[in-house]
Length: 414
Ligand SMILES: Cc1cc2nc3c(=O)[nH]c(=O)nc-3n(C[C@H](O)[C@H](O)[C@H](O)COP(=O)(O)OP(=O)(O)OC[C@H]3O[C@@H](n4cnc5c(N)ncnc54)[C@H](O)[C@@H]3O)c2cc1C
Image 1 (spheres, protein in one colour):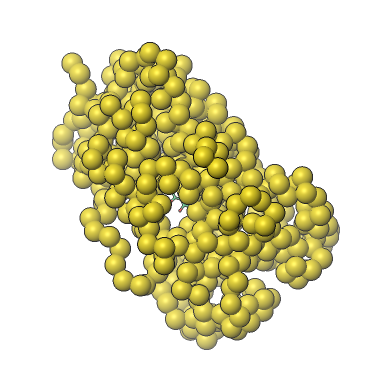
Image 2 (image 1 turned 120 degrees about the vertical axis):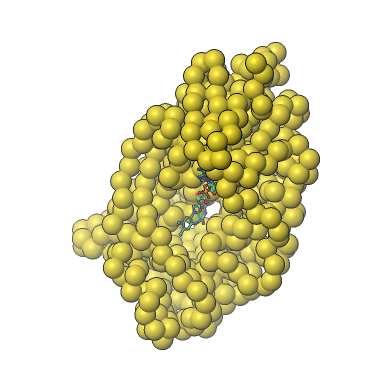
């Protein structure tokens, strides 16, 4: 019997929705029946000038992916904060001084290095994209069970319904139930660090720069917001993060001012605050017969490099490219769930993501450390990278999502 859908995406967060919209706008895949299963799909556009606590640095590569589905233009420009500079320094050094690293869009052919945008606005932009609205069926329901094998794939919903698909795409986030039900194991560990987040005003303008200072307990980032404030992501010990969430505003302002070494002057605090536990997770396999993982369901990464959702968008573009090539070569929709096809995507993206996860974890270990020997090595390392055009090009390319083995869509129409 023919299954209900060709492609069924579990989880309609930024990544799952992006995959569905990309597939629905691809010349080959758009003729397929595509559905997204999401417990809490957004139902109306984010309103008001308030900036939600959850923001992401969206790379140039991701912007191009979102442009290709006409989602980027649906984010109001006043809520997009493009940044053209990035300054990283060790607690012992000074920004732009010895032992610091500076990236500038002027060193690239791009107008900016990336943009800070609220997650909910990115997600809404994707849901509003033409292909998503016209060609994707949205199922507002919760996944409860999953069965996949060579011949068939189906999910059971919390309300008891059963839905079959040629291929199921697991995009249900870091705690992915679909991944567990498919029997895919992960490697990883809890960091003894939590990410504290809030938005602050600063005495000096952020100058469209992403500022990051590495402290022994973890990095603190001031990310430029479009309204002139900065979004803080401070990775620190769990106890300290809890303290920062609950302390008096004056105490928090003074801690933040000191943590950035006064680089942006006095910090003013007024908005909401939150903290998130951090862990590294990497799925040992990205696919099984008729099942494949994308985004945080496949890999959860430390936020210090702002790469999580960007890697997820690259997964989506790579998977769509792989499946599209297969159909263009004469295969039938039912062949898309074959492991010989899915393994091509797995080999491609698992090695790219393993490199990114390893680099980011290595940076965190090197910098979240008070050893004086490592302190010297860090400062020397930052200075060396800052002076090496080749090393800088490598890091900028990775950070912008345009380097490495990027999907064709990222480097098309430049
Ligand atoms: C503090 C912090 C800062 C960050 N900053 C950045 C940054 O600057 N840049 C960057 O690239 N990344 C950043 N990240 C990472 C980024 O937030 C994640 O990588 C991204 O949100 C993952 O998206 P996703 O769609 O894969 O998963 P999720 O956002 O977790 O979405 C999963 C979706 O699946 C749905 N779902 C789950 N279970 C079920 C079920 N059983 N049935 C139906 N639906 C289900 C959920 O409702 C959800 O909508 C940051 C993370 C943190 C914690």
